[in-house]
Length: 191
Image (cartoon, rainbow, N blue to C red):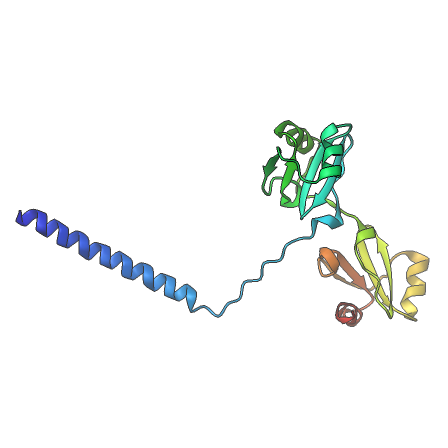
């Protein structure tokens, strides 16, 4: 009996020790002044189309249908299908995929190829701002102040020998290029 009581006492002490350690760890996390900002990518700005498939982004999730699928007509008429398959973060750029069946998703992923790449649909991205002239070249946005002397040289050569490049700094993570950093800073600050 004494052995059982000793075992219970030892177990209780270990349990208290573990609880204390857990409480301390949790307290440290709660006292943290660090802010975590979660930025969700707007998938409606991307072109996920592939030959043989029809795609549509709804509520930031990618619906995929085979061309000619009657379920697509039903989807367009009634909205979300009652019976469908959802694969969270399985698509290009980790977009959640939805389809009438798993086979459609598997065939789409096979046709898609590199899931880390997706083309931005620049017609859906606002890159023009008052006071600036922008040019889209090879998926990068060149920025010039209105009346900038460098713009004439750029229009002639499609490049500037001396320029600043900020990868991912623009709308939807597009790369920005400009004659100088001040131009990019002013462009980013403009509404």
